[in-house]
Image (cartoon, rainbow, N blue to C red):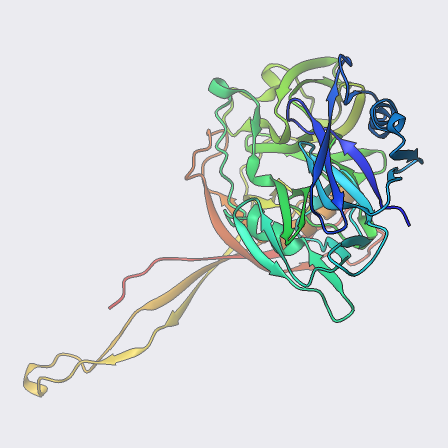
Length: 480
């Protein structure tokens, strides 16, 4: 059986010039030879593929010109894969595909024989090509590599582990184990403090995104792959597969649009994933105003307000109180965002990390029940100098005090209920402690814990519901 490999190219990444390279030799993997194809705008020489809408077809066309005429190669293509077959006996491919691409999906490598010094790699379970994955969901790869009893995996040249197959020879890799550690070095902290008057409305936030480069290596074996992650998690019922070459608003979708509530007088932003550095036209179809803003590639945050009365997005694109139908144009792709602007009210205001990535915001009713809780520490005996020199026998080493805030939400629309559920489950919640219409600083938020909540309105079919919630934070105290 002839040796062959199958591949699927999903994007060209950012390197210049983008290229694809494969290596072959005899079955003992001696006398290796490498062949590289570069992707170019215009073909001026051999081993050049002309960039087009179908990257697989572009590479096949170049291989037909530069490989097939020798009579040593057969090039086939189907809707998903290019298959490159060697017509020379005793030839084997190195399971190594060097590339500058953001992602190459290698479907199969078969060296026409098993055993001996050769290797055969077969993917049993792969991830969707070009996918923008959720770091906090399981993302599993399974494959066999005959002739290889262990291999080294290097993640972003920073984390190295050894991989071993199970008794059936199958390798198992869950990328969640790498992605959650590497994307969450800051433990969900918000590192952006907007300064609209100096830096504008859009801020790149690299803490929300991870490009994970994996390098697999063993004796006579080397392979690489790249995967992309958001700092997010999805549920089975609402899972939607995103692609790294598309743009998205990182909010839950309700019907055909994303919906969100903007509370006037407080800091507020919307997380956006942009597939490129580009200018985006934002149009308020309700008022007829629009503005064009520059977005960076990958994760951005579009700030409507930094808290101050001056320097809000309404300086360049007015909003009406109530519903505003916004349209964001990323080239030919248009994304609808329904923004419900609520008038300013001095009331408890919180931000929290969302399941879908980025920060969400919620405001409660002004009335708050406050309870101070005190817990005694350990008692320490101090009467060691006789009764004549003792004023007290025992001192308490310190008190633990907690402040509990009990409050109610405003009446919530269905999409606001989804927002509240993220608030309940969020790993990081912060309360706004600056004044209404005051520009936020790094000290404007304090961390709190959501302790409990319950429905006041128990009819699930009711259009609007109200929730009760208890928030706690601990205080510093003097101690022995």
